[in-house]
Length: 317
Image 1 (cartoon, rainbow, N blue to C red):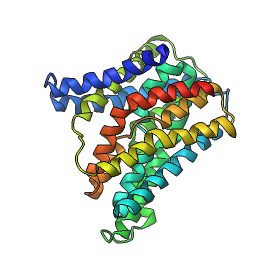
Image 2 (tube, rainbow, N blue to C red; image 1 turned 90 degrees about the horizontal axis):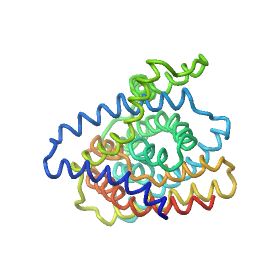
Image 3 (cartoon, helix red, strand yellow; image 1 turned 30 degrees about the horizontal axis):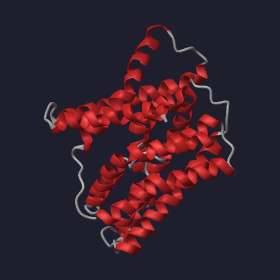
Image 4 (cartoon, helix red, strand yellow; image 1 turned 135 degrees about the horizontal axis):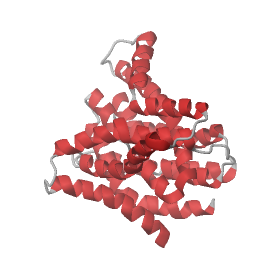
């Protein structure tokens, strides 16, 4: 338990400090946005580049890792969409927001720092493999589902598949995380060590990524709040923090064999709070903003307790 406290308190303490810095106006909200840009476009891509370029992935199968995670992801998405539409009578767009809020983890800004601290190099390799496919898959699925929801609710004509594909391709090509990922793969193929002045620069940027990511989460969390749709948001929070990691836990504990550090890492990734993408989708729809905002705020706050519980439970794997 002492080890768990030593992991959770620093991680969520940094988030709290970031929130406090904006709340007491020690820093301007614009600072959080600028720092977030730095983290997303430079620090995290460099960290992913270093991991992909240097990590040992020989211990397990990426396919089994992706299978275990996406079983939980798909069920959580479907459950969030179904329950919010059926229990609360929301339309297709709000249902999609609920599904994304129930399944999409903040793996980049919270998951990576948590897993680095808890499981070190091996755990970081696992979450990097997850992010390698998570971002392209999610961007593609989200874009298609957004168009479907808009058509279903009568807010858009049926979109051409080629147009959607071109839009997704452009977004992926320009995405800093994707650039960092493929740069890491290319460097790995060269077989060259990451040393010398270039290695020092890479290490300097990568080493601050986790700390700045957590502080940024706290700073930007201030813009969200809790207002309206509380019951629906609590349903979403339960799916995200309890049901989804439980499904992944059962998968890796019973029928999907993974190295111990990999299994623990993806359960913790599944247990991370809702990512900001849920709010971006809600903003695109001009509906469900309160639901997404509540989900982000509630899951981030409650994750202090739930992540602690999952860090304890995964030791049984």
